[in-house]
Length: 384
Image 1 (cartoon, rainbow, N blue to C red):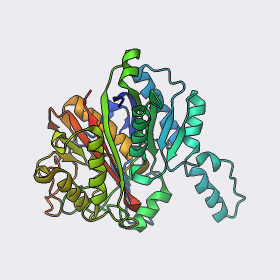
Image 2: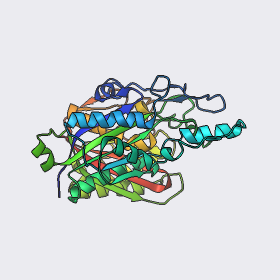
Image 3: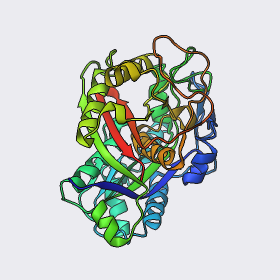
């Protein structure tokens, strides 16, 4: 098996671009939520999201370009002939403009709709930068970014590629916000409180990340520095419910175990978990149950945090961004905190690192994500 290393990444959240803003935001225990300015929320229950400030709002192509350039620059790689794998639901702005024109009785223009389809984003990005094949979009919701990283690692591990660019992107938009609001999934108090009593739900956040994965041998021949390792990956479906997780977290536990098997590791080797941790009433107990299945008697003492409490839920991008955050935690020796924590909930007892980051010498971590439809994904990440 080829040893998969990360040699570069570009990352974007509501805090801005790059690792330093994550250190000053996520690792400092700062939530990035504010009242939404991108659209009118007067008709909705929830009012908050983690938006990158500024007008006009960035496009997914804008942030992906910057993230890709940052990843290649960090890795000192020319970027040619590399597969491009992105978790994305596309850019809906042209669709929204189309239907707004219809509602206003105007003649709609549909010229931008095709370029907003999910599969067009990796295609357009690859064309612009002269990248290779395959050019793939993963659209399986909140595990899409994780799935892109897992598939990229598989391409390298199987010898089908030496380098892969993979990641995901999501920007807060009114159509997705409205759907989650109508389902009463958003926190109306403007805070995300994973694993805590009093949690009300999730909040969306802008996010994107592009990681450059390489085989260790390829990176060594180029003289590239490894920033971390992708040791294992696992995907699992439990098919329990269209939107609710299995109450015992069976699918998430299966994904975690699969990732550990691929890594050739035992749960005792894991010193930190970056949890999916949405802060919703059903997800958090299910995830805590999954952790009990995976870690057994250690489940209450393994450090866990949900960085969505700071960045918001970035949907298709969330797994890729959280992979970068987890790699930073391993390289910096600092575990990010869970913001917004109020009081322990006996239904989801975990060591959730409340409020303040924790010093560590952990060398292996598990990053977990789950999605609607019973989709689950896990990555085992290692220090350089």
